[in-house]
Image 1 (tube, rainbow, N blue to C red):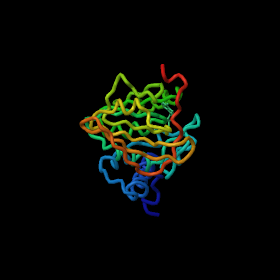
Image 2 (image 1 turned 60 degrees about the horizontal axis):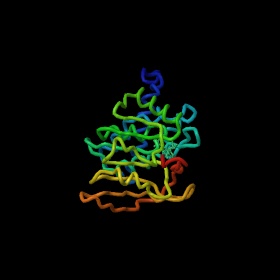
Image 3 (image 1 turned 90 degrees about the vertical axis):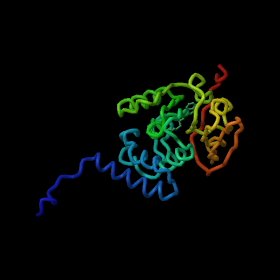
Image 4 (image 1 turned 30 degrees about the horizontal axis):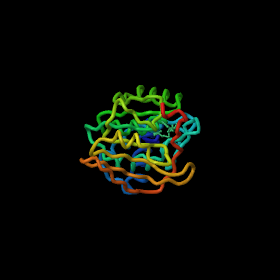
Length: 228
Ligand code: SAH
């Protein structure tokens, strides 16, 4: 037996890093995501730290995963695609609607200046904030609240990313988008296929919308009291 045959199994952290590299190559770059900074963020952020222990071994598979409270963390390719569509730049301020596990916020935080993320379900907001703090993503702020209304106190945003599907684009989010800003949002009927849209606001404040691909997201819940 050579010494190499006796070496212990690699530590799990290395196994996760290898799984992440394979995920980027086989699920993300292979499907056409090209932005080198986005690919690097996807290779770096430990997705397995954001999913429940019960599904940790599946953290790098090509699908969404349950995160509790009937919610899901998106498929890695969709996270990468939405991030690339948003064209994140180092000085950008970002609003995410639908914090969920905190994973998408962590990916964005590697690419921009600050991320403000709002989550309707209080226990998810709390656990995402705890994960982000524990892992050192200290340019992310998480708030429990209704993201249909955006985050007026911190507006305007260079990027707004909505990771739950409204039936129509929430007007408050368009209003809170900076000139030159990008809004990425899945729009469509509840529990149906939705249309992933990229909405851009030009220097004069005019918006244009492009349909990107069909997607399936959990609904953006519209609170009864959202007028308050
Ligand atoms: N971006 C997340 C996945 C989000 S799943 C991640 O990386 O893990 C969609 C999330 O949107 C769910 O957690 C759901 O509770 C939340 N959500 C639904 N309606 C909302 C609303 N009106 N405001 C804020 N969050 C909402």
